[in-house]
Length: 164
Image (cartoon, rainbow, N blue to C red; front, side, top):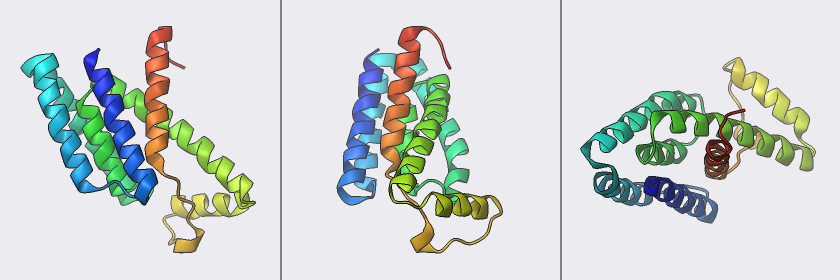
């Protein structure tokens, strides 16, 4: 239970850094990693720390391809991996799924408000076809907020006793 709060604090810290500078800085991620490492041993012991480490590795395996395809930024990948270290693999997986949903909602809403929905659709097609995108055509959102909302959705679903 305590690690849920620590995981939330880690995501909020990363999101604040992301909103402030449009980047998640390495010193923030390293501090969060050290904080979560110590917290893991304190609250969950060696066994719980190993579960968290497994979630961290799975998070990297799943999100590094997203970085390689230009979908996620490097800071998002590192923040999500450190966050996963504070929870378990199932929580990491569902948070990732819910963050995709929130990210899609934000991206579509932003594009619609900027009257660029057609451009977003074209960019999505080009990305799927592995074609190059021009930098001014890419629609970027601070994805750390979508991850945080994905985590809150996961916590809500756990509290409600089920998944979507």
